Image 1 (cartoon, rainbow, N blue to C red):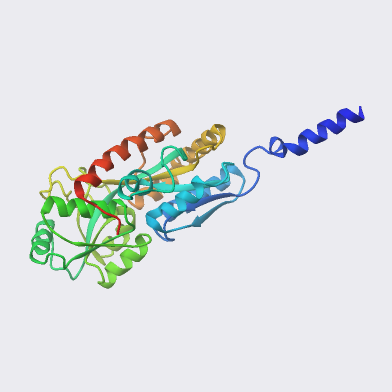
Image 2 (tube, helix red, strand yellow):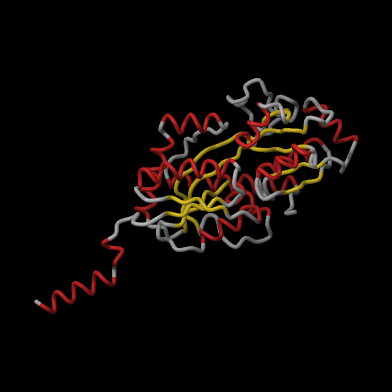
Length: 320
C-alpha cells in the first residue's frame, strides 16, 4: 500500500498540469503595436470579456516594432501552454512574408490560428490644410509635387502602407512612405501637419474624421462603410478595382493544444456575438467576419497570403 501511494504521489508530482485544467493562471495577450490603436483597443475589450468567462486575468502586453513582427515572433517562439497569445493582423500574417526578405517566424507553420476577430475598411484621410478636397484633386496635387507629399502608416507592411503603394502605382504618382510604430503616433503627426495623408483603418481614423480634425476622401473597399455611408470608395472615385481591408485575430504558438484553441475560439465568438461588444466594435467602424473556426481562420490566412504576395510584387513595395 505504501509503495502504491508513493507511486501515485510521484505521478501527480511529475504531471501537475493534469490536476490543473486550463486556465489555472493569468493569460498574456500580446498586442504587437503601440497602445491606443485599434488592435490594442479591441485586444483590451476582448481581454475584459475573456477574463469574465475564463475566470482568470487576461493581461494585454504591447510589444511594437518591426511592423508587428517582434510581438508575433515572441509568441511563435514562446511556450505553447495556452497562457501566451497574440492579437495578430494582416500585416504580420499575410503581407510581411512577401515584403521582408526573411521573417523570424512562418505565419502558417509557427502559429496556431484561433479566431479572426474583425475586418475593418481602410480610409484615405488627409490633413485639413492640404489643398485637396477629393481623390481627383489629391492625384493632381501629387502629380504636381512628385516626392513632396508624405503618407504615414502604422507600420511597414500594414495595409495602410500597401494601400499607399497601390495608390501610387494606379495613379502614376510618387509619394514618400513614413512608417510608425502603430497608428496613434502616425495620426498624431498627421494632425500636426508633419505628414500629409494616411490610408488608415477606419477604427483608428473615425474619431478624428467625425470631429472634423481630419478630412476623409474615400474608403479602400469596394463597398461603402456603414460608419461613413456618404463617403465614396476609391473604386467610385476612378481607381477601378481598388479593394483593401484590414483584419486581425487571436493566435498562439503552433503547438497550442487543440482543445485549448477550441475553447478559446468558443469563448471569443461568444464575446463577439454579445450585443454590447457588437455595438462597441460597430461604433469604431469594425465589422464581424464570417470566418469563425480555427480551421476557417487558417484557410483564410493562407488565401490572403497568396493574394498579398501578388499585390506586394505588383506594387513594388519595400520595407522602409
